[in-house]
Image (cartoon, rainbow, N blue to C red; front, top):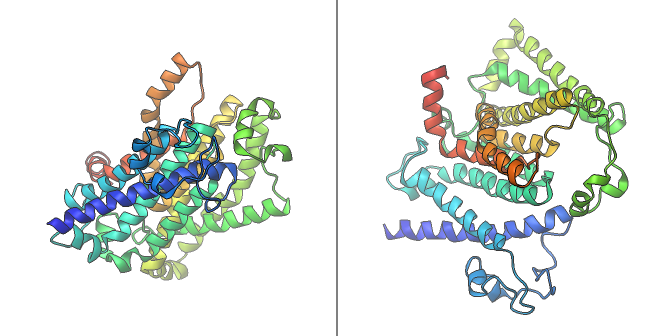
Length: 395
């Protein structure tokens, strides 16, 4: 039992280290600075931080939140991000493997045997990759009102890889029965929609890069630099006809919709249907298409809201960063759950929105943190939500 506690402490400590790196990401990535060099330094006096002053959690407390050289205040965000990341890592491990509040079907007498011998490490790693990355994206969105796409791409790739190998590492029975990773083994029609939509997306991207399809909201070159400066100068941004700009995005999405419809019709043809069902049944194919389908579903639900909201109010509704964020979430948790998370997010954000409107006179809020929180809630309360969906809606 002592080994179990040591492993839990290690996971918590590992979380603090990842949280320390997330602080680097939060500060440097949106400012287009290298995440590797130069070494961390005080933002005020630019003195490199000594290794003994860079111990996660402890250093901030021992230094009392001040630089040891210039005595400038060090934001409490650094401590909070490290602590929150560690709590998420350790809490998720306890929730899944110690307390069994997220059923996995992974066999093992102890939490560690489920984690290592049962392949639970893959499920854990992909989910903490999502949680940690979304934590960084939320912090950036709250400060600068942007979501760096590199963060979304990282989670998306992790979802693709995890879903592709899950049935080999964990086993088909556990993955399918307990919904650990998205698959399409029982949904050949959804698999066809995914493939057709993906082909259409490639066509749209080719059209975009060749100039056949015009991008929306084209920005002047001088506004593509430092993200913080761009946010500060939002009032100087050029004015657009928002409805016209959003119609350009509709044109971009047309090949995706047409591709999905055509693929469904082709795979329903008698000579193709049986072979298609067999092809989709392959574990790697099923996992990859499930993850890609989740990505497309996450993008679709946000993009549809963006399009209809902009057309209705003639004002840009939601950002494309939110589209990529939910696409990344869908690649990890699957189509059904990412759609549920999207509709859960407004309930999480409404209190904060009212506070901003009443006391800070702001009608707009960064939505990424609430989307991220909704995704986290779906991961944690998956089994409870699944029972509700089964009892009331039959799926």
